[in-house]
Length: 285
Image (cartoon, rainbow, N blue to C red; front, top):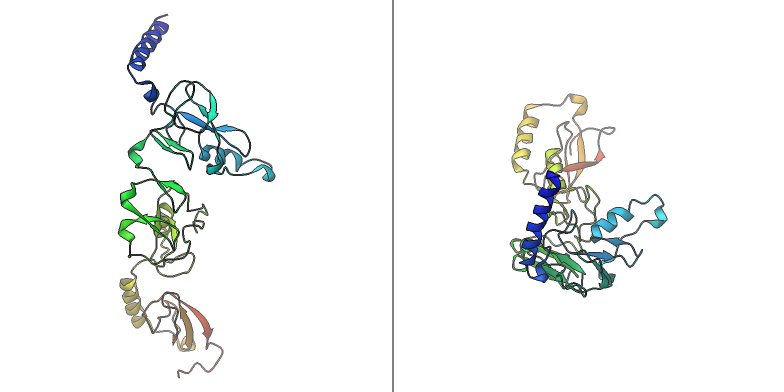
């Protein structure tokens, strides 16, 4: 009985608090899912099921046992929403037609996107065709790469056509509309920041797509110069090899060494052997 009394008192206090809140703001930040705070749910046009957001839908439908049933929602095609407060199904808008509650402090009628947490600084990019986070003033749209990038990268990155409209080379998640932070490597290819950091932690310093060095490796190349100079190869391994440099794309010849083969154009050791003199004369030219 004491517990029930305590609950009743709490409910009365909550009711008094709610009565002081404008109807549009009722329930703000109290509803939603793991992905977003919002006061409505989406009716998926593809399967007529109700989900809090597109991510909830995709997580449920892309793991169905029958591969033929797996699918993803097209956000722009959503026509109906369900109020999380009064459970009324209605056409897409930002105010409930029945109880007057605002579905989200941020609302995009194009993406059918709602979010009560506006600290993310959401904005809609017409060129991308979807909503982004981080504040419009902090981003610009690169037409060649086909995505929004930080203003710090304006005229400061290598463009690769539609580079963001690909899958992360590490985890294979589609990058363009991923909610995870992405980064652009020196070569212009993109991946998730967390995948990039994991690659670094595994001592992998080349782009998984084009094999170019993703860091300034000059100090490492100098150390290799010293190690090779201090370690002579046995006579039977002293032959020339031709290598292709992954960094500058030039070919050059150098002597075989177990530690690596230096590009004679850019001094990189990020090379691969394409022909070997192992079975030939072994003499230099």
